[in-house]
Image (cartoon, rainbow, N blue to C red):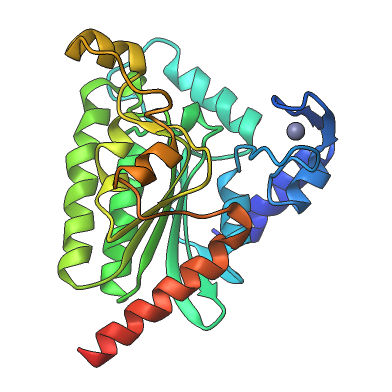
Length: 273
Ligand SMILES: [Zn+2]
């Protein structure tokens, strides 16, 4: 499957419409938003970025390595198959994750991106399998991995099978790590539930885009469980950086250069060792 096929389809779909910014309330052309890395030209709000656009913004050249997904419904959840068909038409994505191998300048890297527009980027069996396959591919090819996560958590329509993906992806990350290969996790708005509780939080370097909502459960559930008032903004990227959960917050327009620098630094350390 070639990346450009998916990309051109998405762009033609996007050019036909406009979107209203949820922050400044102004209507902006989707084509203008795409050109500006999905940042609102009026108020700098970060829009959710389709997986294919994220890959394009990071890699100079690439090939998609994701397998074509089947429609999967492991617990016969009511209307799940129909909803998947609708979701594919609505988003022009085949599933909630897309992986590609390619280059940032002279460095080869595997990039895996969750699509927040597809079932809220939730992790079902396909997503877990694809993320695991991506890490195994990177290990076999001796390559670093960058994962851009954006997720509402586990996919409820797949029940226990979606929760099992937490263990599966964690094992694949560990195998990649044991080969002394670099894994960078970049959390984007929002990263929650089973994704932040598994592969998104166990990288060598964990970064986030500014103002991202990051957390495991919602504030109400946590308050009911621990019976304590929670600090203001405790699930923001800025709060988590201050308290040591993140290594850095990187603006979207700087991510490509930042990731390139990290890969080069890690490579130099490996060479010295
Ligand atoms: Zn705006």
